[in-house]
Length: 258
Image (cartoon, helix red, strand yellow):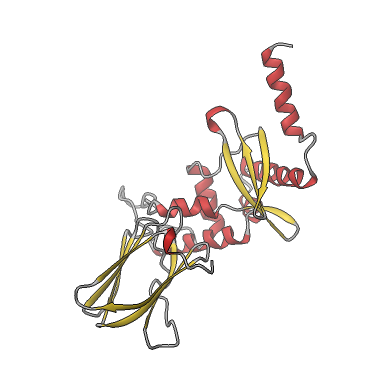
C-alpha cells in the first residue's frame, strides 16, 4: 500500500470514529450537523446548535452593533451569519482528528496540516453544543475593529477602547489586561455601604486591552469586576483622592473563591 492510500485509510478511520466512545461520537455528530448547516447557510439551525452562553453573547454583541448603526436588528442569529460568511470564526473540516474531555467540556480537533482547528463543546439538554465564548471573547478583545458603515468607507467602533463615566473630581482608572476575557460588570461602592449599587458599564463591554475611567468624589471605595466567564475581581477599601488610582487587571487579581 503506497503512502497516499495509507493517508486516505487513516482519514476514513478518523471520520468513521472507529473505536471511539459514545460521547466522542455524539460530539462528532454535533460537529457534522453544524458543518452541514453552515454549508447550507441554514443560520437558524446553526444558531440552535450553539451553547446558551454563546447565543446570549451573540445577541448582546448584535445589540451593540445595532446601537452603533449596523442593521443586525438586535439578533445574534444574523450576526452569526455575517461572522461565518465574512471571517474565519468557523472553518469546518470533514477530517476529525480527535475528541478529548476536560472539566466537563469536549475539545474536538479537525483539519489537516497547518489548518487544524480546536472547537469547544458543552453538554446542554442532553446534547453537545458548540461553545464559541472563548473565540468571541478574543473577537471582542481585539476591540471588535468593526465592519464598514453602509453609507461610507469609515469603520464603526462597537467596543470603545476607552470608556468614561461619572462626574466626580477623582479618577479611578481600569485597564483590562486579561487575555481573551472581557469585563461585563463594574461596581464601585463606598466602603461603608452594604450594597454594590449600579453597574457602571451598563450594557457596555470592556474588551481585553480596553480602558475605563470612573470619575468619583474623594472617598474610600470597594471595587468589584465581573468578567465574561463570571469570574470576580475585588479591591477593598481603595482610598481615592485627586491623585487618582489605576488598576491593571490580570488573572492574578481573580478572587480566590472563583
